[in-house]
Length: 192
Image 1 (tube, rainbow, N blue to C red):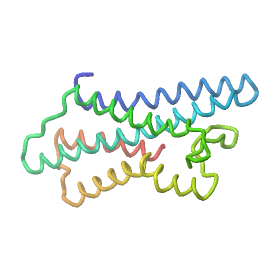
Image 2: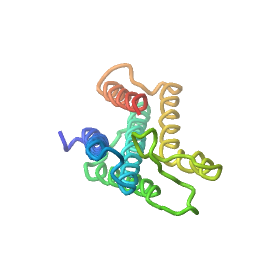
Image 3: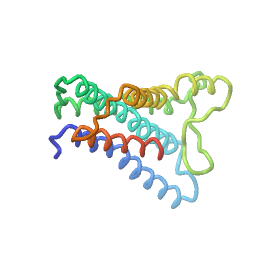
């Protein structure tokens, strides 16, 4: 099953969620045992893995959406779709993970000149926040598009294109595969 590319995508989608859940449980347990936030470093670390986990899911869903779109487009044109190799899927997931890890490091930059700030919100979690006009502009014009804006718009565009061009086959394995991954993406978008 791991050799099937679309199954690999599912495994790679699970990894950020499992990592996020494990690290969130650990940091929450340490904070509860301590009676307050463990340290400023812990806050920065929580911001890093939160950004990494959430952003990686958005971008991996965009990668899966791209392949589904290609599959349906090629099928509609009666062309052969070549599924990506397990190596290619793994390299794509690695590229997404590295990109999202880089975005998460923005919260580790502790200078006033960089308009990205991570703070404890409601005593629950350290996340990127807006603290002034400059950080608000940076957050909405740079961070949001790079974190989840671009992949979200892309997924919406593909859904529109599939519907508009009637790419979803009436029956068969391709329809089942497209609907299966479509539901996964829908659940992700609704839950996150």
